[in-house]
Length: 67
Image 1 (tube, rainbow, N blue to C red):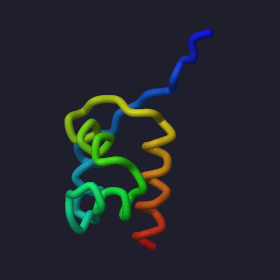
Image 2: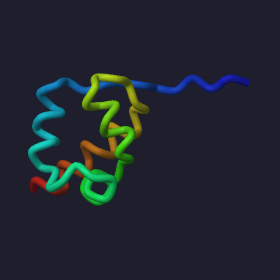
Image 3: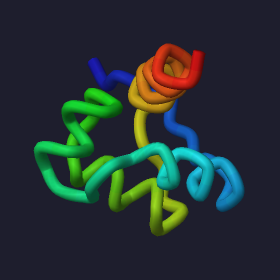
Image 4: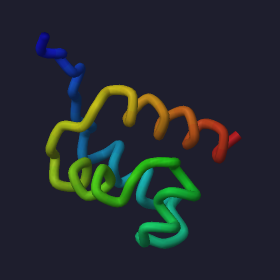
């Protein structure tokens, strides 16, 4: 049985805001900051869709970091 994944993108403005809060764009930096893979980060940068759960996790982490 095929599973349908909920995929989404983010706006360039949101990506820029998230990028400014990222100390370094490395595999370790992206994982430690947003708890997502560098591959997912690059897909978001390029406007490609990723799983909605990845975006949700990244947004939640950003909210934690900016409180």
